[in-house]
Amino acid sequence: MRRAGTAGLTKLDLAKYPFLRAASAYVAEMHLDIKDLTSPSLSGVLDRAIKRVSEAIRAGEVSTSIVDEDLEVLSYPVAIALVAAVGNDYLEKRYALAEAKRAEHFLLAEPADKLLAIARELGWHLRRIEVLDGGILYEFSVSVLDYLRNASGLKGPKWKLVNRLVRSGEVLLTSQELARLLTEEIRRRIEASLEKATKGARELPEALRPYVEKVRELLKELRLGEGPSLEAVGEVRFEAFPPCMKAIYEALSERRHVPHAGRFAFTAFLIHIGMGVDDIVELFRRVADFSEKITRYQVEHIAGERGSKTRYTPPSCRTMRSYGLCVGADELCEKVNHPLSYYRRKLWALRRARKEAKGEEGGEGESGREDS
Image (tube, rainbow, N blue to C red):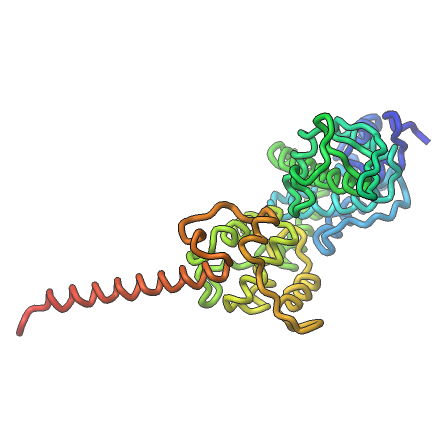
């Protein structure tokens, strides 16, 4: 077995985490060029690269089985090149998330020393510790900067710095918490590498172009990233949305990450203002980790069409604030305590204003009419 080239990391580790610098160095040592992929001897690398992209599109997660370590390491940069060549922003986000989920599967099973090596390979400043507090064993302390950079993408009270144990300017973490934060770091890094690869994309060899077209066709076939806008859905009035729901919708529209709590709140809100299950499912189609089966099940559950038949209500303003989903109040927010109350009052005001405007137009028409 060839050495991986980085202390604490084996070739199996590079197969698990092919986005690491050590993996890039390992590939560079082989002096392979993308033109070499048309060689029959490297057909397995190309096949696995295509499978990685296909799995990301179809399932939202790249498979975790490792049959050949070299195949896993070499196929990753090829998959990046294929995704970059497609030039689809939605695909780039979905692929980055799919690879991050694959990495998380491995990270959650790693011993503490291995997590330490991977985190340091990613440039993190952290230390091994053993602190038992409230029955919880904290095994790592990480710099506040590294923590905030990745926790900002995670929602929920537990990730807020004010709710963390901080000692000597470092945040204490369990192994599972470190794995989750590393997953977020990995997702962001892969997105960044895809953005860079797309901007400086090299012309692919003619023999590889059909594979790029296959990826485009698969995206088109599954209609991923093509969700409708709210403006196309029934009587829903986006201009009456409270700021928090507007922010969630805009994040979805721009294919940015929305945490589970935000998706639940938004779905329950849409159900209560009259949007149907099918329209809500279509709206989520543009989300990077979209799975129609899972999304439909969750939306139907929130709508009370499954399980206990309970129709869930969106969280109150107070709960939205605790989840970190409140984006700042406007004047109407100060007068209500629930997003639905905001919507109904704003909708009433909009309808009243429209009615008054029509009345003024009618009045002007009467006064301006000449007698015959």
